[in-house]
Length: 446
Image (tube, rainbow, N blue to C red):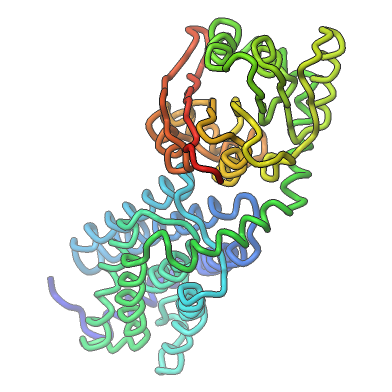
């Protein structure tokens, strides 16, 4: 590969800048928007931020590396372009489809450094080049050049408040190493010195960070914030209230498994004369089945209209051992160690923070008590993962967690339970399977 002269190199940057105008503005606005979403956390901000980063990496990989610089300088840029495309795919898979990435500004060393990295990417990168004497068309603008995009990525990854896949750092780190060449090579792009330092520091800190660091320890205060989140409660109430009048017909039409085996399976796993809590009970389908064996069943749901439908059925069927009330699953109004069994059917995948709900379930469950948890097996099918991700983003049906059976069982185990049974159940006429897990709480008191 022949290294171009300074004049040719900056001429190429100018040519690229002029060729893609006005995408500078669009991509820069995308960068600013995802930063704002990290500051003002919303329900879908994590997915949108990951999607925004994926777009920027995809743009740089295809347009900058493969289309432009490969033809102008070297075929080597085809390989670097493929690496940037790979990084875009990683952000889409782990940040949009699997929700394994989360971004949040907090008061800790990681977020402080992340803020500095972000400011460097969107402000100081271009400012340093301008002060170095380069005119606008010779400057690597944030959002359309690989180096500022890499720095922005490190900044946002430093904000992660959950344990993230380590290999998502590899491509950004590898590209950051080119910063040392840009500084001490023939071009003297001084801003790329920051790229090198940020890449080394960022990769070191992100790779050594463990789940028990300060960011994760802030989960207690974050959890309280979630519980008190009135917007979340209002949104959940409104969504499920609108479904209450047609919920039973929906189940009968699309989930034949309920009548064929699910309700009987739940009844078989319920102890005789036990006290049961049905979390997210809906119109009471599962509660009434459990009541046939239980001493007492408490059904709770966030949606008042769902509870009204359940109470109406209770009066019509003259069932006396079931009690329904409107409650928030994130803050259960029951004493510790109160229930022999807690059932949570077709709900955990619809909850933004199921780990907090499981923590509450564990609290109210007796030592050695049983959890029966069922979710839709979205993770069993790639096409349903895509369809329901889109549905969640546009607000049609909230499905935040797309797990397969092993992932679901592992999640339950990590939440303080011991899985004793797991199975995939499906009626031939149903489109998707249900994932059925039975687990026990440890026998120590909370």
